[in-house]
Image 1 (tube, rainbow, N blue to C red):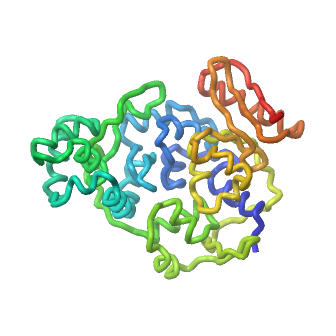
Image 2 (tube, rainbow, N blue to C red):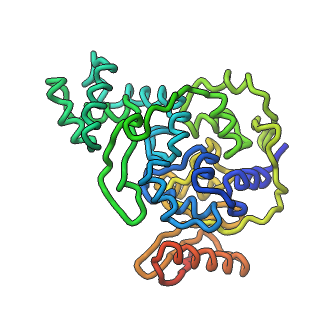
Image 3 (cartoon, rainbow, N blue to C red):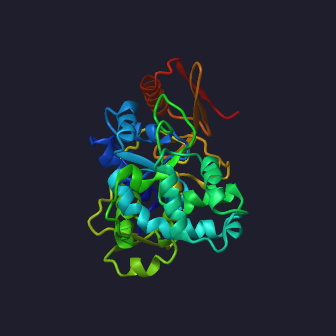
Length: 353
């Protein structure tokens, strides 16, 4: 049996949040099997909280040199992955992306569409330069007369493996979401789908976990036969639920100290499980901060409040009071966050009345 606190420490350890890691950015992104990036700047804060001596320009350079990319992957949301990992992760998640489009409001407008011809036409268009969804739809419309251009633009980013290109997602820059094909931006990958390998990597970064947790993280269905064929450690939580884990994976002492950490919107830690009580209480989850996409602050390993940058510094809104040591830890970590972002100002803490 594993307690909630032990589960919390195991997950934080694998998420590189118990102690900042001395890893290259690409190694960290691959260990995490991608990072949630629908908010373009979110990975910068997520990596700063996980890596020692991280600076935003480290990730910005990797994006502009095509060593990491932003693409619709897990749960059909934008994730940051390495160029190498795109060829490993995207093929495994492709059926999900296409299934989501098949249930979208745009599907009926594309009945009878030849997917091979469609993919070739999209590739030909973006070979001349990245396009927005609207531009893709308008450019595709003459080839499919009578089809809604908006539906064609959406289909191009669901039915064809694509990536978003810089300056979108580059620290200090901004830009519309423009798309090109993964093969044009990264080259051919020699791709192959490996669901069992994806599950192993998930457990290495998020475990121990239930089958439902793996499904919630990836969006994939039909994983139970894959998981049952694997040699995994079996644990049970305090509610009797079966948790699966890699036999060699470390389970830290549940009394291991967990420092204050500032997490971005939709961080992996908060979206990586079906049951999120290992990192946020039911009471705090009902506040809507996770689905609402608010940046969160961890205290003693659990969500304890939210934060935001303001013109005059960092504003932290807590759900409950802190001990003296926790308050000092938060102030120190907040000051470091202000320093790395270059915002300046001071850390201000708001407590519930």
